Image (cartoon, rainbow, N blue to C red; front, side, top):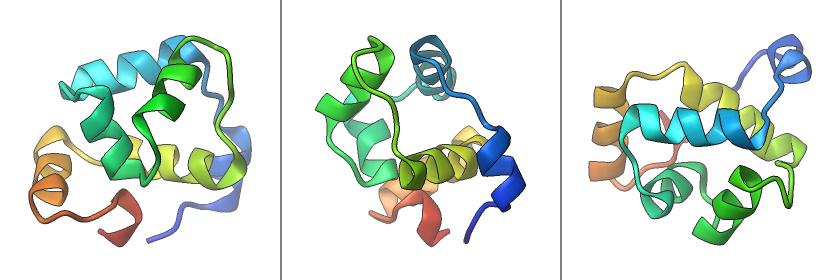
Length: 85
């Protein structure tokens, strides 16, 4: 699954928005990171504004926003990443 290029280019992800997205779905940093195929440290750095997601990770965040909490939990249970849905 891939996100539309215009959706990726228009997407803005501040640290606060990434934190809200993670908390809205009720995930720890570790589980959120597993869905995105990154480290939990990267999530922490994004949320605190010390780093920003690279292009590939912005695409994955756009894809993650398109899923419900239930579908994301199913992906985690199946040990799949958000782009493998």
